[in-house]
Length: 452
Image (tube, rainbow, N blue to C red; front, side, top):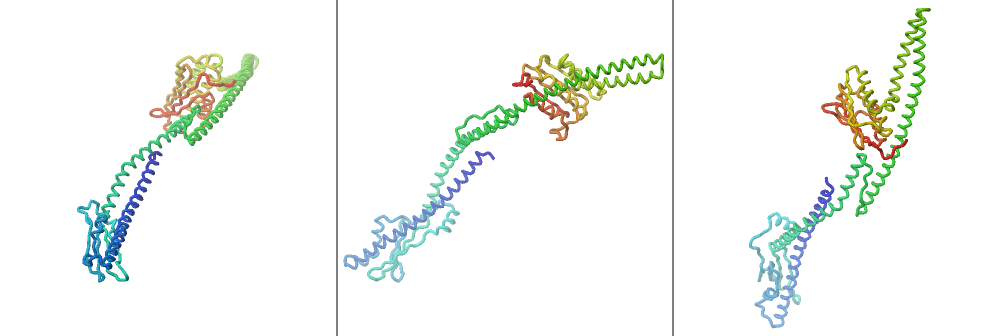
């Protein structure tokens, strides 16, 4: 659930709970006020009746007019109250009601049932009228249950009306405040998403809220640390590749100079032996020719090793020639089962080191993987040069149908990825339609920093 709506729902629940508690309190206060008004009226009228008895006892009052409720009515008796005076033998003498009925009830039946069950309105309040030890009777004040429920329902309606305005207003203000406070969360998530794609140069801005600022500072420090580590790792990888290529260049030169000359000498000596043996010792001719065949096979194996160690076309003819030679060699060894094509768009001369040999090694590894695992009929290599980058695409129509591959798929693709990351490039794997693997590699022509 969205955090804003989650918090807002909690606030609404709290508001509803507070509204319910307030409604209970309002109902309690309504019932308490009605009962208190009945008690106050009973005390006031009982004092008036005692005053009447004192006057009668003093000879200034008439016993026939007792009890007289007129004064109580004139002095502001509360509406909804009924007063009854019961004689000493509990017989009604006189009663008076002041607006004790409601013409048409406006509250629901459920409200009335609940209110009567909880508060039991309309309870009598009784006061004994006693003067000089003589009990004259009882005063009974009965509040109107209907009037009490009408007042309570009116209070509830006022509360609900007030809440209907204030609660949505408060929720709106809270929602806007939460949205403003949580706005940095979206920036943080977007920044983390960019970092996850490898863009560690992104930095989060400063925030007004202290907690968000602490989070942004920690993320920026982490990104800076990771960026430094990756930069150092890239420098180390470039250095290792440079050292590796130097070793390969040295080994290739040694193989070419030493083994090549030795094998050429062996072939020459074997030819001389065969020529001399044809006249002096014909039995040696087959052995001499066998030596020639063996030296030729060794020479072919050495040429293959030289091609894998350091193709001379890169140094002598350039990257395009070496790639053409590589694809042609794969077409020869493929026996027609797989067709290898090379498409070059743009000039590939003058590329800074180690870009040429890196591109060659990536293509070499990609074609090797396709030959070993893809079971493809066609493999296409496309190299495009722009002003500031090289785009290399190796696509086959093999059996690959989903990503990712199994972890034990070999070291070919991880090796390509390591080379690409070392030069601050990007690599992406996708599945071709309807099947097959597409390797996309983008390399900057001039990396930020390359070690020799």
